[in-house]
Image (cartoon, rainbow, N blue to C red; front, side, top):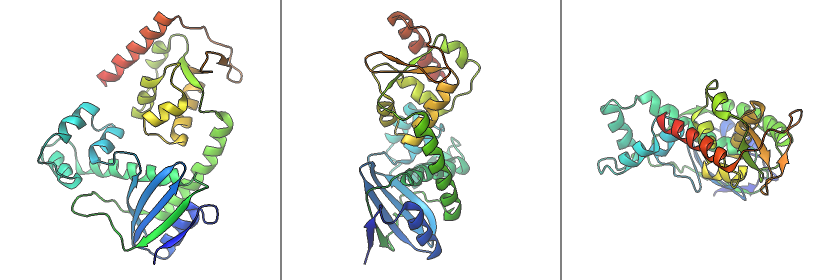
Length: 273
């Protein structure tokens, strides 16, 4: 019989502790207003996870980790010989495109991202289905100690609380400050940060950028907060009313043609990466 409950009574930390201590094997399904997730365990170890609404194919994981471009992923997905993730991974290694470590690291990063999302969910339901495992012949599985996951998840909870204080509203928009192209030449941005940059537009709220980029609230807050501190962007109301960041004077307003020019240059740089 499946174990069922409510996140108000039993937190993600407590669930993972139970699975770890009891060395459970099976599937944990968590559902809330934030979404749904499926997390698989073998003898108390995290081995696989999937997030509802996301494309959990290996190619998508490799794009998120910067190992493939979206165009490369689309081309690979069209190949008939790659019927599942295991076969695809074997082909990529065989033809020398990626190493086994590249693939395992990308899958692990995706799986952990799914699980770390759950730590901030305080409402919703869960159920644990014993002995249920993902199909080994089609999925690439990892093996992660839950002690490390619990410690990192707990640390992120504290960081989430701080970021929510610093950036409480995700329904505001972003715009570039004066001459962001000059600043960007001296800053190394990650793949996720470039993805956010490509969506910056007064019409796009931070929440919409997160949804388009398949990012959690923690990820988007962390990236936007870093860009704000670096002086790359500033917050604006959807109607165009600027929100002054603490200790920073309002920056000059872009003319429409200047804004388009900056955005186009940034997008061109992204395509070259």
